[in-house]
Image (tube, rainbow, N blue to C red; front, side):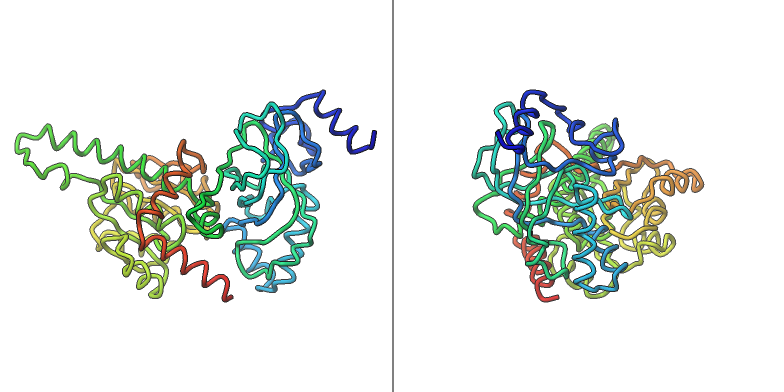
Length: 380
């Protein structure tokens, strides 16, 4: 028996942890996401799945940090990503703490895997690369280092508690990858906005001066910081579907203002630096705020206080950016005496993949925003 076969046999006999504890090399006893190093050995346990990697999608905050740290030098960016994966056994940016997700083809599924995947399935992983054992074998030779989507060859391991979606046949793979990378944002936005809409409708029903159009008039105002980006545009579409009365998109410059305004996804589009709290509050208020729900989809740090100021008392702020400082958010809200509920978008809501893909299928404007973004990345 070869050494590789012996490893496979030992792992199959020993079993493992549904959440991947047996893949943690350093330090022992922590979950895979918190580990400094994982074991990406291709030999799988009975409830694991091995995926042949085709493409990585680095999350926006991680790619921005890599790009800025290396002055946009593609070779340096590529080398740094390879170094991280080689040293950590996963793509886990030590500066941002974030990773991304991947697309690949199932090579082998253990007999005890509950994921329902079979060899040959082309899938997108819906769990972070920060907790996914990963090995790269081609040196990222096909990646020009100029965009978030990374052609790659290698393998990744999924645990019993991992999440993956079989890619749809009706959408191009790069588009599906871009949508699924942020699919948690629209799903949670839809849930939160739907709850606000139901509450305001119930209050309208109880009013003595109830009118037939009260429900529509009572819907929540929703502001999305970073409204022209991937997660931001999907969140606007989801909020509309969930019953938002008025949608405000906040963008950083005139080019994005034009792009988002043309799409019709927002009722008002305003330009403001999301890191400037006073400017954000003023822009949202002038556009019809304050917001009952504020969704933060900006991949730069320092956007917490503007989102809080732009939200009405009793409202909700949803943070989706991996650049968010949660101590800054909590202490900032306390210092501002802001009565707002703050949620961390954890990337998972049941049905989130279908929600995001259906939004793109149902909105030509949303699909064009994504397609234009992908075209722009290919030109850079």
